[in-house]
Length: 113
Image 1 (cartoon, rainbow, N blue to C red):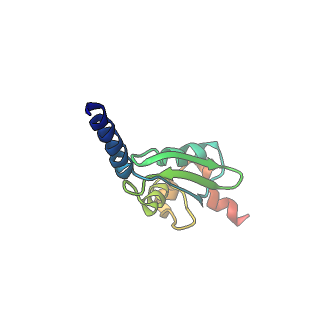
Image 2: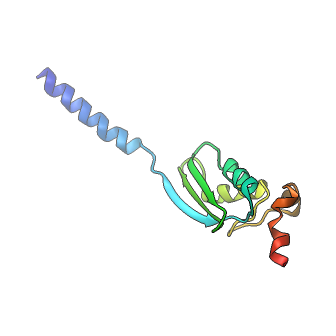
Protein backbone atom coordinates (compact mmCIF):
# COMPACT_ATOMS: atom_id res chain seq x y z
CA UNK A 1 0.00 0.00 0.00
CA UNK A 2 2.86 2.37 0.85
CA UNK A 3 4.40 1.71 -2.58
CA UNK A 4 1.08 2.52 -4.25
CA UNK A 5 0.89 5.86 -2.43
CA UNK A 6 4.46 6.68 -3.43
CA UNK A 7 3.69 5.76 -7.05
CA UNK A 8 0.54 7.91 -7.08
CA UNK A 9 2.45 10.84 -5.56
CA UNK A 10 5.24 10.44 -8.11
CA UNK A 11 2.81 10.34 -11.04
CA UNK A 12 0.85 13.32 -9.69
CA UNK A 13 4.05 15.31 -9.24
CA UNK A 14 5.05 14.47 -12.82
CA UNK A 15 1.78 15.78 -14.20
CA UNK A 16 1.94 18.89 -12.02
CA UNK A 17 5.54 19.51 -13.01
CA UNK A 18 4.64 19.26 -16.71
CA UNK A 19 1.69 21.61 -16.24
CA UNK A 20 3.95 24.14 -14.53
CA UNK A 21 6.72 23.76 -17.11
CA UNK A 22 6.77 26.79 -19.33
CA UNK A 23 6.69 26.26 -23.06
CA UNK A 24 9.37 27.74 -25.24
CA UNK A 25 8.71 29.36 -28.58
CA UNK A 26 10.99 29.26 -31.60
CA UNK A 27 10.96 32.15 -34.03
CA UNK A 28 13.07 33.47 -36.88
CA UNK A 29 13.12 37.05 -38.10
CA UNK A 30 15.36 39.42 -40.05
CA UNK A 31 17.92 41.58 -38.25
CA UNK A 32 20.15 43.93 -40.26
CA UNK A 33 23.89 43.54 -39.83
CA UNK A 34 26.97 42.92 -41.93
CA UNK A 35 29.83 41.28 -40.05
CA UNK A 36 31.11 39.12 -37.24
CA UNK A 37 31.00 42.05 -34.83
CA UNK A 38 27.32 42.50 -35.71
CA UNK A 39 26.74 38.80 -35.07
CA UNK A 40 28.30 39.05 -31.63
CA UNK A 41 26.35 42.23 -30.78
CA UNK A 42 23.03 40.76 -32.00
CA UNK A 43 23.48 37.49 -30.14
CA UNK A 44 24.68 39.28 -27.00
CA UNK A 45 21.55 41.44 -27.06
CA UNK A 46 19.57 38.20 -26.77
CA UNK A 47 21.57 37.03 -23.75
CA UNK A 48 18.75 37.74 -21.30
CA UNK A 49 16.54 35.81 -18.92
CA UNK A 50 13.87 34.05 -20.93
CA UNK A 51 15.98 33.46 -24.05
CA UNK A 52 17.57 30.01 -24.14
CA UNK A 53 19.14 30.21 -27.60
CA UNK A 54 19.88 32.84 -30.24
CA UNK A 55 21.90 32.55 -33.45
CA UNK A 56 22.19 35.13 -36.23
CA UNK A 57 23.11 34.12 -39.78
CA UNK A 58 25.19 36.78 -41.54
CA UNK A 59 24.38 35.50 -45.05
CA UNK A 60 20.59 35.51 -44.62
CA UNK A 61 20.25 38.12 -41.83
CA UNK A 62 17.99 35.62 -40.04
CA UNK A 63 17.99 35.50 -36.26
CA UNK A 64 16.75 32.22 -34.81
CA UNK A 65 15.60 32.60 -31.20
CA UNK A 66 14.21 30.14 -28.66
CA UNK A 67 12.50 31.98 -25.82
CA UNK A 68 9.93 31.71 -23.06
CA UNK A 69 7.02 34.05 -23.83
CA UNK A 70 6.09 34.16 -20.14
CA UNK A 71 9.42 35.83 -19.41
CA UNK A 72 10.01 37.94 -22.52
CA UNK A 73 7.86 38.98 -25.47
CA UNK A 74 8.83 39.00 -29.12
CA UNK A 75 8.32 42.77 -29.14
CA UNK A 76 10.85 43.00 -26.30
CA UNK A 77 13.36 41.02 -28.38
CA UNK A 78 12.99 43.52 -31.22
CA UNK A 79 13.34 46.45 -28.80
CA UNK A 80 16.56 44.99 -27.34
CA UNK A 81 18.01 44.56 -30.82
CA UNK A 82 17.13 48.16 -31.66
CA UNK A 83 18.83 49.29 -28.46
CA UNK A 84 21.94 47.41 -29.62
CA UNK A 85 21.82 49.45 -32.87
CA UNK A 86 20.18 46.95 -35.23
CA UNK A 87 17.01 47.24 -37.31
CA UNK A 88 14.64 44.29 -37.40
CA UNK A 89 11.79 43.46 -39.73
CA UNK A 90 9.36 44.88 -37.13
CA UNK A 91 11.20 47.94 -35.83
CA UNK A 92 14.09 50.30 -36.51
CA UNK A 93 16.82 51.45 -34.18
CA UNK A 94 16.82 55.19 -33.58
CA UNK A 95 19.56 57.15 -35.32
CA UNK A 96 21.28 57.54 -31.95
CA UNK A 97 21.18 53.77 -31.36
CA UNK A 98 22.36 53.05 -34.90
CA UNK A 99 25.19 55.59 -34.70
CA UNK A 100 26.50 53.88 -31.56
CA UNK A 101 27.69 50.84 -33.55
CA UNK A 102 31.14 50.57 -35.17
CA UNK A 103 31.68 52.20 -38.55
CA UNK A 104 32.27 48.88 -40.29
CA UNK A 105 28.87 47.69 -39.05
CA UNK A 106 26.88 50.50 -40.70
CA UNK A 107 24.45 48.43 -42.75
CA UNK A 108 22.21 51.39 -43.66
CA UNK A 109 24.99 53.04 -45.64
CA UNK A 110 25.55 49.79 -47.54
CA UNK A 111 21.87 49.75 -48.60
CA UNK A 112 22.37 53.06 -50.42
CA UNK A 113 25.04 51.64 -52.75
